[in-house]
Each structure stands twice: as C-alpha cells, then as structure tokens.
Length: 147
Length: 146
Image (cartoon, each protein chain N blue to C red):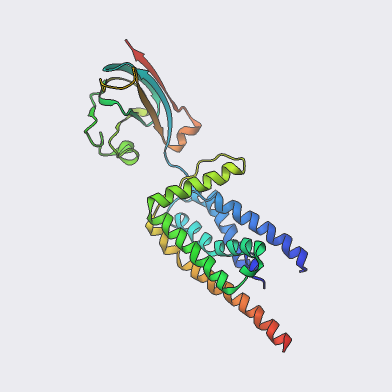
C-alpha cells in the first residue's frame, strides 16, 4: 500500500467515522468522560495518515516509513502542546477559526486545554505501528515479486 | 482497485477527515451577549435589564460598582462571588453577579476614573448564559439613569 493511501485503511476510515459520530451525536447525547476522550483517541489515530496523505500527494518522496514516523510525532507533539499550554491552545483556536474563515464560514472554535487528554497519545504510536506494517508489507511483496 | 479510483477515494477520505478534524472543537458551554454605554466620569448610574444567568460589568476606567442587589466591588477586589456561574466563568477580577431566576433588572452606581483621558468612559455589560439560552430569551439592555 502506498503511504498516501493509509487514510483508506478500514481502521482509519472507522476512526474518522467515530470522530464524526462522537462530535456530532455522542457528546450531546451522552456527555461524560468517554465521549470527552473518544474524539482524541480516534483523531490521534487517523490524523497522521491524513497528514501523510496530503504530504505524499504534494511531495511523493514523503511517502516513506520515516515520513509516517514524522507525521505521528508531529501529531503527538502538537496535540500535547495544545493540551498543556494555554497559549498554544489559543493559537490553535485562532488557526482553526482562520481556516474556517478562509473557507468562507465563520464558526466559534473552542478548545479546552486538558492535560488528561494526553492519555490518548498511544494512538499515534498505534497509527505508526499499523501504518509502517502496511508500508513494509507492501515493500516486502514487491521485493519478493522482483526476486 | 485501479490507480485513478484509489486517488478519487483518497481525495474523498482526505476531505472528509479534514472537515471533521476542523469541526472537532469543544462545544462552548458559556455564551455572552454584550452591550455598552459611554458615560461621563466620575459617577454614572445605569439600569441593566437582562435575560441571562449572570451579569458582568467591565471597563478599564471603572473603579468601583455598587449594585442595587447589595453586591459591591472595587477594582482591587478579586472575584465578586465564590460559587455559581460567576466563579466558574469569570474568576478573574471583574464585577459579576448572578441573576436569580435567569431574568431581572439591576441598578448600578459606577465610579469611573476621574482622570480618564477621554471625556466619556466606556462601560461594557455582558449577559452570560448557558447554551440552552440560545433557544430562549437571552440578552441585555442598558439604560443610563440621570
């Protein structure tokens, strides 16, 4: 599988669907700890694939295992910063609100910095483990085929 | 799946993932409706009528506020109330008082810094409300009393 296509993994698509369901239904219907964290877990899983997909489309050399590692680290780092540092959280709010504005929509963006959300960080590691296996497996397949 | 179909699916997946990533901000749990008046220093009397859970009064030149409800506040004070909506959302040193029953009218005597550079001082009044307020009565009206 090409690195850019990791976003199409069933687990990745499931994570996107779970994020959407949680943000738009579950948070309102069942507010609490689980719905409060579910989006963090699902987001940290698929976001590296999302980043990699964009990067590899724009710059094909980014489609490597190393690039996947960078995407996972970057996702974890930014996630940690916005949840540990109120200034970073505010910057994130401005950035996302700015993107919405550029897209022609104005909507309030509220991010609550919560260090407890960092319990979801292992999902970025899981994304790397799953993604790197798929990239490597495919490389192995091509190597075997060539031999 | 051929290359072109995969690219289309990838494009769709990136779009959907990007949209939901941007839309994943926490829902605000506190809203404010703001209004303001410009008053001449050093003292002003205002009447605030609002539908909200709390009334918050701010102004860089405001020195003290005395409410008809009995709540008094000076610029050196910390939070005016230690619990309720005011403590939760306006813990910094601004004037804030709860609105019993979610609707009411208050009169305030506001002392404004006399050496204010402008001839008038701006007083901002916020009505603070919970998300449920957005679908019911929510707002603030200010009247300057003689």
